[in-house]
Amino acid sequence: MTAEVGRGLLAVLADPREGMAAEFDRWFEDEHLYERSAIEGALFSRRYVSLEGTPHSLALYELVRPEVLHEDAYLGARKIEDEARAAENARRVAAGDPRPPILDPGARMTAIRQEYALVEAAGQHPAEIGAFIWMVRERVASGDEAALDAWYAGHLPAASAVPGVRGVKRYRLFDGTPGYLVLYELARAEVVRGAAWAAAFAGPRPSVLDTATNLAQFFKVVYHDDAVREMAERLSDYSKRA
Image 1 (cartoon, rainbow, N blue to C red):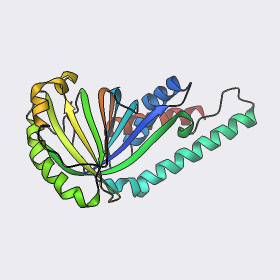
Image 2: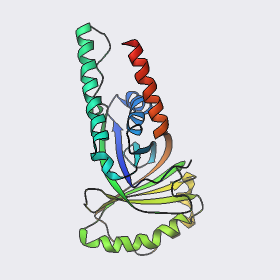
Image 3: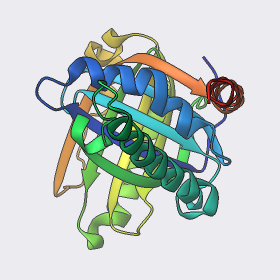
Image 4: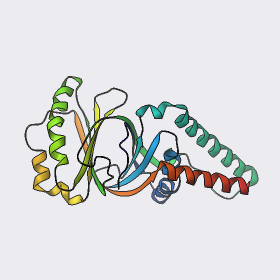
């Protein structure tokens, strides 16, 4: 699967709250990915489920630029969703509707939400969406960033040349703090068990304050144009029922 490499990325890494796993999956599957992908400036949204590492759900929203998350289209969409949820819940109460209230996202999940700007992309197909991903999140002391950048300058070409690696993208936290996310787009999960993969990571590496990794399997992707059509159809259906 191939898409455009955006200059911005929103990562929402989440676990469902106790007893909410089915509702959590339904909300992502049927609502949230479409709502966010339809926003102007979004390229696509995709979701992975962790095979190794936590959190369980990795939702990645590819953006034309990181500033999209602070522009009117995105902020307005979030405001409209909040207002619509409150209005519908009030209507249900007033009408004696037996259905439960529509939940706030925080009632479904615990989540880490981080905004990133693209640093660099490597490989023959860096825009390809992997059937699996190896995701690395790491923080480094501000004085050690140059050394880490230099290490990645050699590592990314080597990693992207490993058979089964479609491409690699490295991001930096958009707020300017020295935190990074690296996505390795994989054709197969077994890639990370091979000798070529190990060799790409061999040798001295600059120290980091902390690091977290996930091996995750593709779950779903929603592209912007498809999401716009879907949301328009839903609005039309809603208008007919109103």
